[in-house]
Length: 179
Image 1 (spheres, one colour):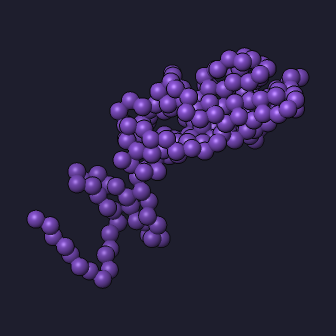
Image 2: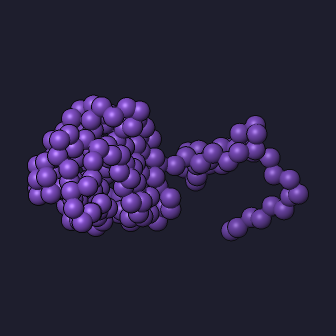
Image 3: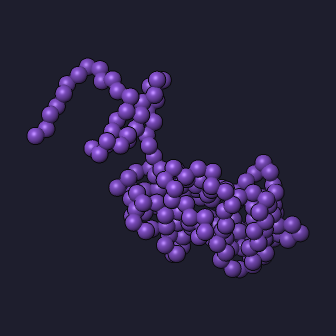
C-alpha cells in the first residue's frame, strides 16, 4: 500500500533511508547536505622515484579525507563498497632535476587493467618541473571488490611528490551516482 501526503510546505531536518540511516540533511541555511562518498589522498616531499620506461605504482603518503574508509594505504588503492559511478581526478608534482623529459604519463587502472592515460608529450626533451593534472574521468565500480590505483611512466627517470610547495600531489574520488 502506498500513501501519498500532499502538502504545500514540507519541513524536515533529515531525510532517512528505510533502515533509519540519515541519507541527507537540510541545514538552517536551506542547503541540502547529502551523505556522499569522497576520498582524497596526497603526497608532498616524499620524493618517490620513477624509473625510466617502467610502470610504477604511485604511493600516497596521507589520507586527507575518506568518508567511507575505503582507501588502502598498504596497496595505495581505492576499493569502495558502494556500487556506482565515481569521478576520479587529481594532480602529480614531478621534479625532474637536471633531466628533461619528452613524456610523462599518469595511468589509471581498474582491477589492475589500464583504463585511462593522461599523457604529457613533447617533440623533444622540454618537460621540466611541473604539477600535472590527471585527466578527470568517470568510472563505474561494482561495490564488491573493484579497485582503482595509479601508475606513472616516463621516458627518463623522475622524482614525484617533491617539495614543490605549495603544490602537492593529490588523487581523489567522488561517488556521483550510486547504482
